[in-house]
Length: 335
Image (cartoon, rainbow, N blue to C red; front, side, top):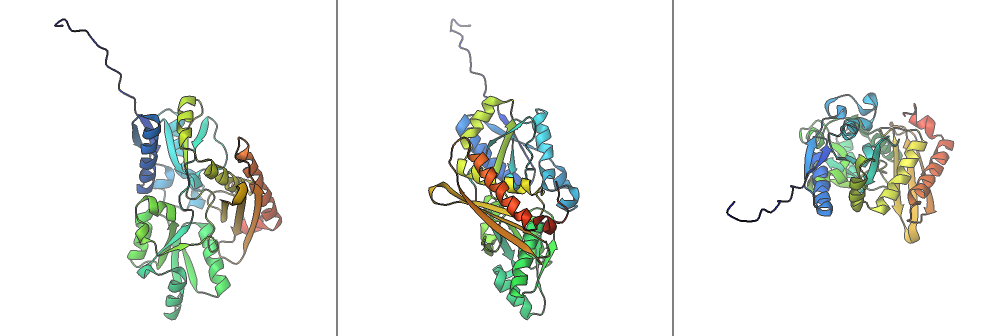
């Protein structure tokens, strides 16, 4: 050995396996998280693409069980040890806590608003007025009963002509309905378009006075197994407490209404002064004939009980919505 001392080489750092759906948006979101996880842990992260039933089915979300169908395959991969952690759009997560899994982090939220992508870059009012002049309603596509309910309620309140069209598909497919002339506009989440670098295609951000977002919209959820306490602790560095607490209020409202992620329910929690949390809740009939809006406020101390405080606010507002007839508006209460 030429008389040279033998030095032991350090073992290569094992890459963490991040499970993600195959869509362009899911891959973009997972790539963002992967870079942050490497930054805080020093470990490389490899993306493991997993196809979910929600990605392959062409049926409506209501028919196949709501947006939880985008989550179950990733959760199975976690529990079977095929991946180390997963990234979800938080609005896709069922509200029931899964056995054996931990919500390790909720990073800081993106823009919560919905966005209109329309022909000629027209805003909602401009689009409706222009097509009314042509003697026909504006045809706007969305796969969300929540969006349908609020769009149709907006039109009804103004005596405007508007037709909502149920659609499925990824961002390219949906925007293609507009560029291909099949629809006049589509409504998508601003956060997704921003993460894909496609914000320039937005014709108008729909203010929350027009359209309250879905519970958890704009936020991501990072899950791992609860048994992996070291990874859970490491991922917690990416947690943003104000976001986590706000979405806890929104999701508690959704759970208390016993409504699925595809129900016509909207909720948005926003922070005011002195840790005051305001929660707005909306339940509507998809045809827009009735829309029930209520809000609640409460001080939240950002300590270990903050999520429980926020959840209590959500449940209290849900009780008021139910007393006001929310169950009737939702129709069959999906679980």
